[in-house]
Length: 163
Image (cartoon, rainbow, N blue to C red; front, top):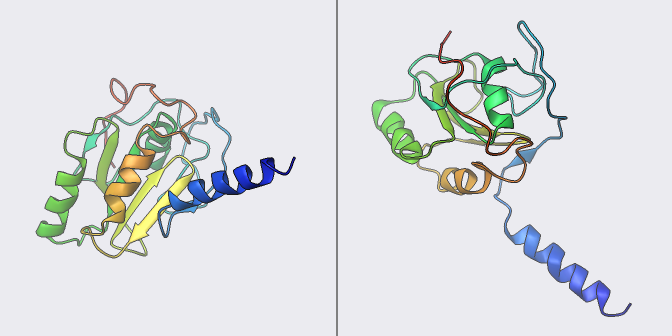
């Protein structure tokens, strides 16, 4: 029994060292399909009830419906959102960040309290700059990450509309 405690402390320390400063986490049950417009606790949302169809992953120049994107998050996607007034250089930085990543969505989002936010199922990071190094770390950890209840499910072949 004396050996178990140091090993447990070592494991907890190792887990803590992989955290990304500023990430907020949330708990949501999976598979809660609903129709219509839904209210979310976070803005942008990071999980919860959602439409039965998912949003196709990709880069969008118009806002998306939360209800479809949340289903994509359940499938392991990361949603990168930005204030519509973000400058062209900042938007280019975000586009390069998601380039070649099949489980990402990029879109403007009205009313955000920071210029950029990344949301995954049960996790969110809000930052003041598209150059923030934590954005790549968040993508690396949460795109197809362990928090996604339906990791590996499709992120294409469904809804591709915008608001």
